[in-house]
Length: 119
Image 1 (cartoon, rainbow, N blue to C red):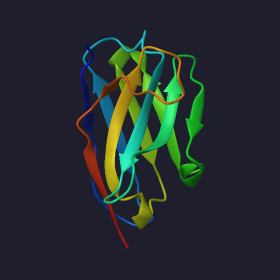
Image 2 (image 1 turned 90 degrees about the horizontal axis):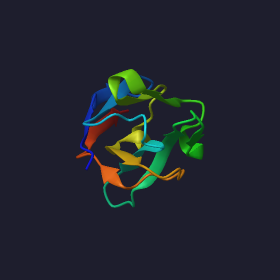
Image 3 (image 1 turned 60 degrees about the vertical axis):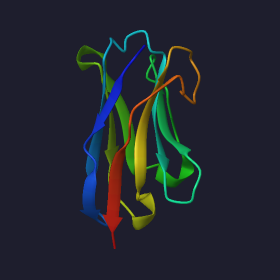
Image 4 (image 1 turned 120 degrees about the vertical axis):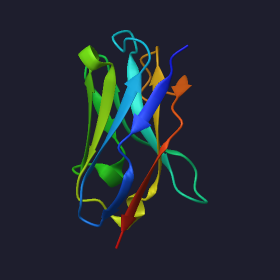
């Protein structure tokens, strides 16, 4: 079992930046895929970004060029740097992890952190 704890959410004005962190209870060295999802009110959860153990990344089209996912195995932490935030980025952001090499990790989930972007 892997526990994931997100932090770094909050309220920010449009155009601002936030960095989300996801700390894992176990070494992420063997977690082949980690990622961030988000869910806005009344909408389905969507994959925002994912990263494999080989540092291969994929992003939702809506965040390409603005968000960057990275992982620090020494700290058992995955980050999501979010720049040029827009009101439509407002959502609860969830961290996810998977031992398989999937590009859509879903084996373990964090509790979520709220991101609110004001216009």
